Amino acid sequence: MHLFRLTVAATLGLLAALPARADPVALTPEQVGQIFCISRVGNDMAAVSGLLTPDLASAIAQAEAADAAWAAANPGDKPPLGDGIPWQSYPDYAAVCTAGAATLMMDEASVAITYAFPEWPDAGFTDHLQLRLVDSPALGQRVWRIDNLAYGTEGDLRTSLRLAFMP
Image (tube, rainbow, N blue to C red; front, side):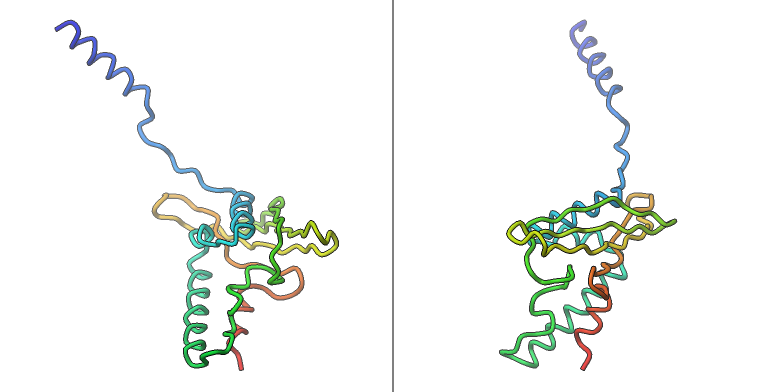
């Protein structure tokens, strides 16, 4: 009986030392930029899909649906998004992607995304992720999400998606 009481007391003591629940931790704008860069270099944007604002996710889904319809209507021809979603200024694969410091403006942030080509040091360029704080009912807090991508040349992701299907 003494061993039972000791075991129960030890178990309760260990349980009391555990946190009641784990609080969710929101990503910083810089961390969102780092995930974006890892996805670009890895050529797999799946992780980024969960970091988009609902508006941008919807714009991308509409563009992908329009691209599929165009491809079905024009077999054998390269569709407008034949190189995929234009996630950067230039479609060339960059071996290096670096997320810079964020510039904060109320509930918006901009993160510099710098691409480099080790073989061609002068060929690098910088785009800017445009983030927005959005409510996350699942987390019970506001979180940073990608709302657009400003190209280092001119234009942006949302505009490119819209213009891809204009006659």
